[in-house]
Length: 539
Image (cartoon, rainbow, N blue to C red; front, side, top):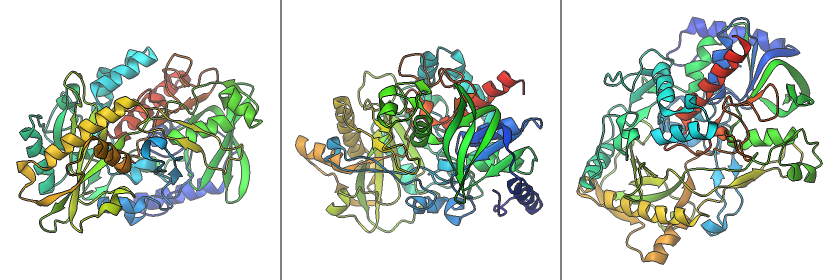
């Protein structure tokens, strides 16, 4: 629940909101109209849009705690959240395609979810992503032009006026990175040296064609993080029809046959049930959403029967189709100390691994400090360095998550399966080559002493570097995908196939990972879910 005022927020409002949530938490009801599980980038949107109707009683359940920590508020401190109590701390299984390495897979835990611990990048995805979503769903409402209209509606854009692509009246404060680091400008100069065009923003014409480079758009206001929870939920947290419960783990969904009727939760050592008169909405992310579905009897029949879980609905796609952006950290030593600015990453670039592609399949960002993997760190990391954090924007590899057993407290088995598809190795080689061309270009020479890694290598050495340096962008998605085929889990309205009154609104519904950071697309998923729920229930 709300505990403290947030920097820059009205203190009287913060007091009212805190007192309101204290009252509501002290007297939890046996049922609500809507239960939203997860207060992250999508769940925050859904809860806000439903609570805008004063006749709808909304319960927002979050497993983590509040968002008042300085590590959340200060953009520069975002790395300190990784591995903390604000991180689910997921761990992938050993990956033979990465030389047996086990990658940590961070995911936000607390009000705001990933939007409270991430790098604050606002990246809308490429036109081709949304048109692919529309084709998979069989619904033009998921297409690029429809989604662009939603983006215009929800943004409070603080950059140069652009009526075609930007909006200024929405709840989401978006601005270009303030006073970017010289290394950010150097990346754009280096891109132009390679014949890659640059743009005034990464969220406009740049993402309708082959790609390009731009200064990053960020959810930062007056030097402080503006999470999607702060954008959507906090401003309405004084409403009597919105109850925000933190520190509560959803254990399973409750059903009457194939109709969702509520959830079982655990809070403060006590397990109890709360009913949903209208709908349950899962917004718990690409690991926990399939976990909840399977624990509740929705998933592949053989997997559920293996664990003696009664089958409510046989959906083979639950937990499959897992995707993530894999990245490779190429590194240079700086010729002199240069303190990071903002989040430490202020320029982004999207480009193609092959000339024949119509859309970018590679993602690059400059990071103003070293970012090695646990293996490449052993090669030696400079005291003062910068990293080209670059990887695959459209990986072909697919992973899977599944239950370890039927105990909700046990962690999932996460087989990320990165670089299992040979096409991803080819794209990774092109990615690292372009990293080196950019970082060793004229634009960076005033700032660097020399290349640290990977340096010149033969083909086998390059492949070894790719395996050893690979890390996640923390963009896990796709494990409950939207679509019409046998492996889809939700339909175009994000309702679970064959189940009444149960929807999913988070990155797990993506048929494929979007080109770029997933925070902004998750906001769109929340808006789409809320609009369809409101229409169905006449809100």
